[in-house]
Image (tube, rainbow, N blue to C red; front, side, top):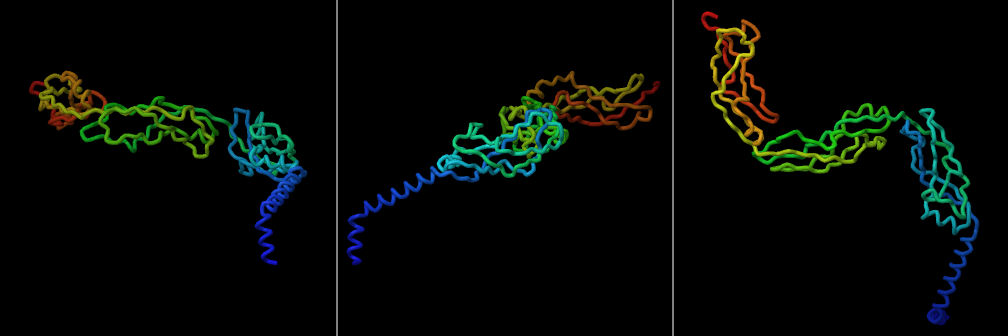
Length: 318
C-alpha cells in the first residue's frame, strides 16, 4: 500500500501541482473580487497658504495617519504601492491655535490623484491641533567656520576671510528668528595652506527643528594666504603729539621700526609712511618715560619699535 502511494505521487506529481496552483488562483480571484474594509497608512500633508504665519507644532505630532478604506480586494491591494495622502489646506490663519477635523473627503491618491475603485470611510485620528507663530524675515551675516583651516609654516593670512554672499536672509517663526544673529558655514576645508583658496561651503541651519529656511544653501569662502616677510626700517624720527610747545626735544629722537606680515603688504610699506610718536597729555609727562605709538600701516601687519619708549624733555629757555 505504501509503495503504491509513492508510485502514484511520483507518476502524478505534475497533475497534483497543477491542481494546487489552480486552487490558489481561484482563491485569489475570488478574494480580489470580494468587497472588504481595510486600514492603510496615509501621508499627512499640511499646506499653509497664509505667508504671515508658520506652523510650528501639531498635536498629535505625526506625519501620517490611518485611513480605513472600503473596496474590492484587488483595488485595496494597490494602496500598498500607491500610498494615499490626507491633504489639509489652510487658506488663512486667524489664531495661534487651529483645530482641524480630518474627514474622508480630504483623502486622495499619491500626488493628489483621484482614488479609483476604493473609498475612504474614516480617518484616524480625526482631529488635529495646529500651532502657529507669526513669520519673521531678517538678514544676518555669514560667519565662516575656520576650525579646520591651518597654514603651512612661514605663511600668514593676508586678508579677512570673505564669504560670498556675506549675508543671508533668514525666514521662520518669529520667536526663533529673532534670536538668530548670524549663520555659520560648515567647516571650511584647508590644511597646511600655502596659497589662497576659494571653495563652496554649505551653510548650517541655525535651528535644528527645520522650521527656519535660508535664502541660499551655500556660500563661496575665500581665504587669502601669503608667505610671511619682515623688514626693518632704521632711524625713523619720533614725533611728539602735543608739541605745539617750543623748546622740547625727545630722547631718543630716532628708532628702528620692524614690520612683519604678508609679503605683499610688507613690501608695499614706505619709510615716509611711518610716524612713531609719543603722546603728551600735560606738563607732568615731561621727563617721564612714555610709550612710543605707531599704528600698523596696513591690516594684518605687525609693528615693533626699538626702543619702544622715550622721554620728552623741555630745553633750557623753554
